[in-house]
Length: 212
Image (cartoon, rainbow, N blue to C red; front, top):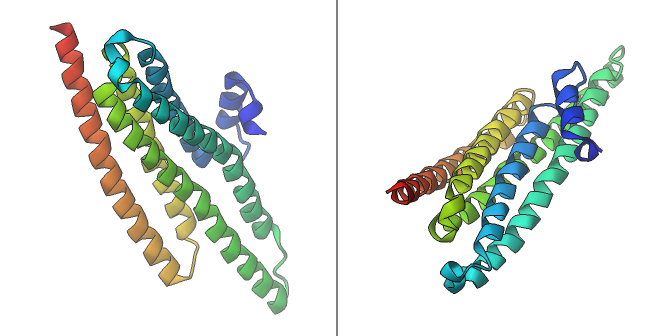
């Protein structure tokens, strides 16, 4: 399991010639880090008299955040598994017409499956952005910069996930599948970037007030 490796081991693998982890796994990990930063802000907010009125809500946010964080970590390994299916399809023989047909069918199935993980990363990261948006309003001002950093990480996870979907879509011949995937992604990215930009605008405003 990739997520059980140390940070150093993971980075070494990422930099190597090994096919996994790759961009998809990196996107999922960055997303998990982004949500973890939101969780940290929650932990630094609860228990403080100044934020007593929002404590219940922050605990609820943290519970949701932990679930999203764990799911994004799970997707690091799932991305590696779906890539394995694609790699195995590439290795299938194609000497006869029947073998060519079987290989093509296996490849199309594997590529569609490979799209599902980065799409999941994008959708999960968007849910995480919604939580960060609320933390930008009610999280401890002393840790508010971490909401911003977490938001940038989640933004990167979404945009990176999109690239990993596209590279798989390039080999898919089902035009309706490809068209819908692009439509879903474009809408998801548009809404996510709006949330991310608004969140970081609020973070910067609160940071400047802290300085003042």
